[in-house]
Image (tube, one colour):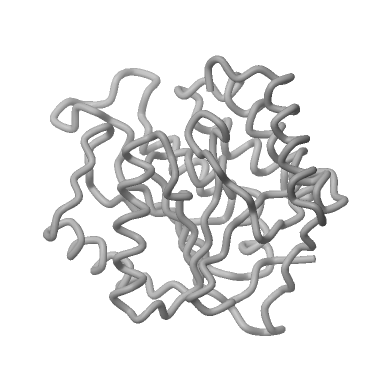
Length: 248
């Protein structure tokens, strides 16, 4: 997020909101009594928390099962033990506990993502074991290779089951990582933002005091678009079922 100032981000947000024309209302909740299995994919520990942590907390609060599926453990040297104060797996477990979620790791290496048939098969097996009703992943137009990689794996797994679960894309580090993102759905996270913040700050080795402020500016901008204090934006893949986002 370096080089992206508050003024530039808010200016970009104003242009986005103006271009959207109409505010997007939060999606309706799923049917009463229907519990969902929700899986949120991220390139690294911390990505789903920043991109959709408030929404995931809302799912957990209504009794849905939430899983955070990380492409890697955030360690570029898997053969070595974590550096002191940089145990990314422990941080991810703490963040998941705050959100009411369970962590799963896909076993790849930070910065060295591999996309080939064996890894496609392995990821299909991971998602087949989880059986999601709703899947969140990075928007594919992203400047980080690990973000693009897990979305390619997730999209392939979705196609392999005849697009049988809902697929939503989220934004993270907007303008630096995620680009050209125009949400189709917004979820009010005003009530769950404190837990999202706490979950993001659980990744203490990743400078949350610098990155969270910028992500929160995005949440405030999305909130303006739907008349709430804070919101998270998503793009729903129209070829999948509409399993429902938490709302209004």
